[in-house]
Image (cartoon, rainbow, N blue to C red; front, side, top):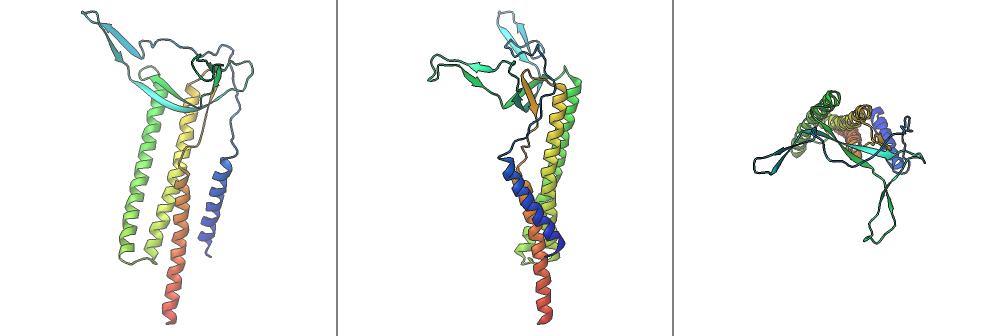
Length: 238
């Protein structure tokens, strides 16, 4: 077994075990700051969100202002002094109040109101789209080349091994890029947005199959390389 095959196999085992453990163990940030005057409340949207104009016939025309919509993962702060969201419906089969815990929250920020978060979000979105687009286009081109060579019967070759290894590496890089960019975006939002009684937290939502498939391709690339060497040895023997 060559050195690369050992490394790739070890990384694949570590990744599979890591994802399996992640399903049983959850790690959270501790609440660092809590304010006594935090409050969640309902109110009508202000002019920064919607502009109402009364026409001559008395009808009201509403014009919704552009906003950034950010979906973030949240966790309720563990503090017995904080109130909890509750819902009560006398027509429900559960007439007693039920406790409501949010896990995801969509935050809407007026487009023209907060330049700092607007610039941060735009930069983050552009970076994600650019990196992911380049990687997936590159992976697609490599896969097309790989299929063409396999259809020509070129299986145990140096080029096939290289295509598979490069595709696998790009998939791993794409996964890690999603994780890193997602974390940076969460930290950026956390520095600009506060939600009463809730902590904004980072949750890795990148597809784990991306890194597992990538490592599997890298392993197969080395197996093909070993098959190529074995084939050449047999031909020399004959």
